[in-house]
Amino acid sequence: MEMDLEIKELQLPGIEQRRPLVIAGPCSAETEEQVLTTAHQLANGGIKIFRAGIWKPRTKPGGFEGIGKPALEWMKQVKAETGMLTSTEVATPEHVEAALEAGIDILWIGARTSANPFSVQAIADALQGVDVPVLVKNPVNPDIELWTGALLRLNNAGVKRIGAIHRGFSSVDQKLYRNPPMWHLPIELKRRFPTLPIITDPSHMGGRRDLIAPIAQQAMDLGFDGLMIESHCNPDCAWSDAKQQVLPEVLDFILDRLVVRDALEVTESLNQLRKQIDELDNHLMDVLTKRMRISREIAEYKKLHNMTVVQTTRYSEILDKRGAQGALCGMNPEFVKTVYEAIHSESVRQQVEIINK
Ligand code: PEP
Ligand code: MN
Image 1 (cartoon, rainbow, N blue to C red):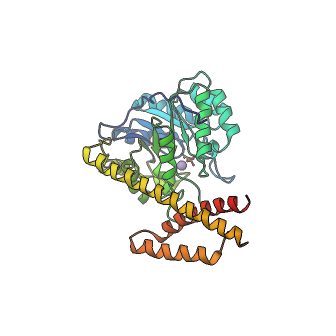
Image 2: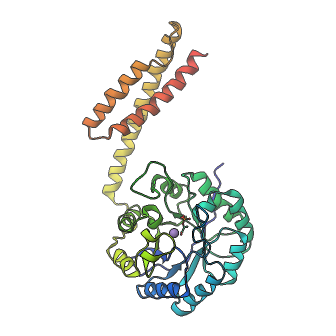
Image 3: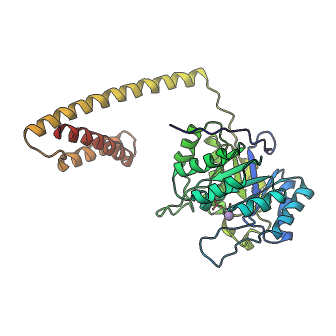
């Protein structure tokens, strides 16, 4: 049984009408001056929600691990002086307690923490009975069940104002992105939980200033609900994630140029096109069913003549022929190969069933 989430609206302010929910601020709170300077500059640009890491999870020891509790005082000042809401990352029940006591308005669970069910459960237990919005970053590994699981643990503890932050996934062979977006994963999350707000974090995806604008635009084009972007009053000298932070005025520039699409309006012509797609999908299923039937007939023949199920030369011939054909039709040969591998594997499964009958 698919478990469901009980989701209440986050009730958080966006910036101006045409812009999405934006959470901005430095990767880490470093000094009182850095926090307050950045906060005032962001507030002047219309940002309503401030972020800063107080406790920093570092991949290796020896890096800057955050100021900890004393920095919570600076967050209180941000709130008092600018009126912005404040948010920070929590990884343990102690963080939760300290952050709530300091009046932090929004909590988020970081990517390294959401990958660990023990930690998430401990945080959920600490949040029992507390009405505070909690955003769950995707786990570092591309595992949507783990991401869903973290949301469910919080929800089961009574946290209803929940949202997700999509910050990309670690990958061994990607060069362009620090954490490739793998958009199909947050799209699948949205499919499972249509009312769950999903916020995109282009800073940790790109890992580079120049990638923030294009990723943010892509997120808007795909209909995601908001953005979390790292911004610092002196990015080059930041104590963590220096390469991906932008000046508040640069953030303002990026947000100004962002095209926020209107909520999808389903028009008659779109409906017509969708009908055609449905018809073609029916067709595809029909053809696949026929192909499987013939494949099962082949299995009967192979059984009768004591042949093996997989004939590798035949399989390579199909992959090559259809890959080339796909390329001629304007499709990526890799895509065609993936489709045929899937078809072939189902076909083999059905043939093995018959041979062993
Ligand atoms: C951060 O937001 O600064 C952070 C540490 O992000 P993530 O958990 O996505 O790596
Ligand atoms: Mn960061």
